[in-house]
Image 1 (cartoon, helix red, strand yellow):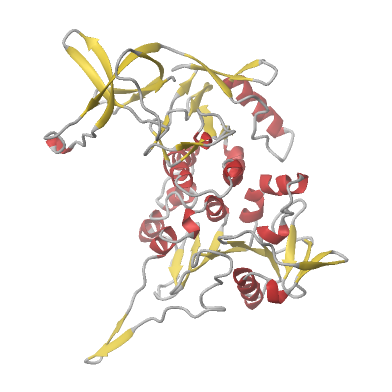
Image 2: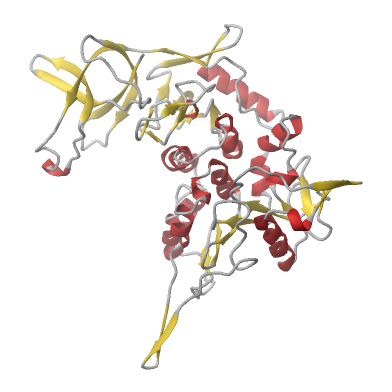
Length: 461
C-alpha cells in the first residue's frame, strides 16, 4: 500500500470513466510523447468524464489494455487526469508529479513512435520479429539492442517531461519496437534474453550503471556496495541528471522548471533545494556553508528563454555542464536574493527559511517569490579576450585544445593564463579590444598530487 496522492484522478479501465482515485488505489502511470495536443472527445458522467473508446489516442488505448491484462484497474495519464485548462488544479497536480510517479505500481513507457497515435508495439501494432537461424543443429538467435540504447535513441528520450517520469518511477515497463524490457531501481531484464532472477550483484550493478542520469543515483550506489549518501544524490543531480534534462526538447518554454519540479520535490527531504532551478545543499562538515551550483555553462551556445533569469539554466535553451559542484557560499562568494519589494535575503537565510517551512508542511516550498535578481559579492577581475587557433597542439600529451575565444589573464611578468570562454548566446560575441568585468565564483581544488586549482569566472555583460 502507498500513501494517497491528494486530488489524484485516474482512468477506470473497465468503465473508461475518469474518477477520483479510491482509497489505497493501486494504479499504473503512462509516460509517452503527446505529439499534437488534441484531447479525445468525452461526455460527462456523474463522477467526472467517460472516454469514448474509438477516439482515445492509440497509446492510451493500448495502455488501458495492458493495465487490465496485468490485473490492475486504474491508469493515470496526464492528458486526461489533469485538467489541461490553466488553473489551480493543473498547477497543484504538476507540483506533486513526484508523488504521482513514485507511488505508481508500474509506469508504462512508450519508447516507440513520435506521438500518442503510434500505440504500443505488441499490443495494437506488430513488433519486429526476432530472427532465428539453425545451422548444423545450432540455433543462432538475434539479440536486440540494449534497453538503454533503445531508450536514448527514441523520440521519447528527447522530451523534457519524460525525464522525471522515468527517474521518479520505481518500476518501469518499456515498450520498444522489438521487445519489452523491465527496469526498476535494482534490476534490469529484457524480454528476449533469458536471465536468472538472482539477487543483485556487481554484474547487476554494472548493467544498471548505463542508466546513470536516468534512475536515482543512490540506488546504483547501494548496489555497488556504497552507502546511500546525500553526496551521491547531489553528484547524480549536478553531473548527470541536469545535463540529461537540459539537452532535451520542450514544446512550451514556460514549462522549463515545471517539467523537472517533481525531481526537485523528491530531493527536498534529502536536503537538496533549488532557486530558479539552481541546486544547493549544506556543505558536508560545515552546515553554515552552502554548495551552490552556479558554475555552469552551455556545452554549445544556446538561445535565450524568457521569463527565467539569465543566471539560471532555465533561462536558456540548450544542454549544460556544471563545472564545479562545490561553489561554496559565502566562503567563495556572497550570494543574495533580491525580492520584488527590494528586500535582500542572503542565500543562507533563504535556505534556512525553506527548511523551516518544509518541517511544518508535507508540501515542501521549492520556489522563491522574488524578482529573478541574484546579487553576488566577490572578487572582480578585468579580462581581455582573443581568438586562438591551436593547430599542431591538439594531440600533445593527450590534451584537447579547442579553437575559439579565450580570456587572457596576466599572472605576473612573462606569464599569462588563457581560459576558454563558454558563451551562452549563439548570437553573442565579445569585443577583442578593451577589458570586460569578470566575477570570481569559486575554486575547484584538485587532488593533492596534482597540486593545482581551477577558478571559475563569470563574464558580466
